[in-house]
Image (cartoon, rainbow, N blue to C red):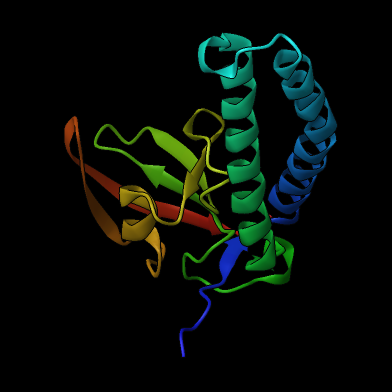
Amino acid sequence: MATVEKMPMLQEGYEKLTADLKRLKAERPLIVDAIEEARAHGDLSENAEYHAAKEQQGQNEATISDIEDKLSRAQIIDPRDLSGDKVVFGATVTLLDDDDKPVKYQIVGQTEADAKTGRISYNSPLGRALIGRRVDDEVEVSVPAGDRYYVVSKVEFI
């Protein structure tokens, strides 16, 4: 029997997925209306509007299915309930780069990751390298731009 892999995420990520799902489900009737309107134009074999609406419907249904799968496997984690000195999911980690310049990242789920806002996925190269590390541990990460070296200077659960 296959086991279902849990998908860790923050409450905020869960709520965003739920809102996306609600929006996509609300679009269903609009897409059906577009298909019906295009179908009324006649010959379906050369009807671009019909094919575009059917493609949109397929993409919408696939996205709904994907989001429902993620929500069904969601394991909501509140970083404020965590403690310790190890980097784990939800932790906010301050790193020092080669120039001792601080960089701060929060370890989040795949759907919540946004490096521009300091949120990296636990599955990203840096996220995987940080999990389990402690303050003063050195971290080496291979990224497309080359190898990067960091020192963990602080682990917070905020």
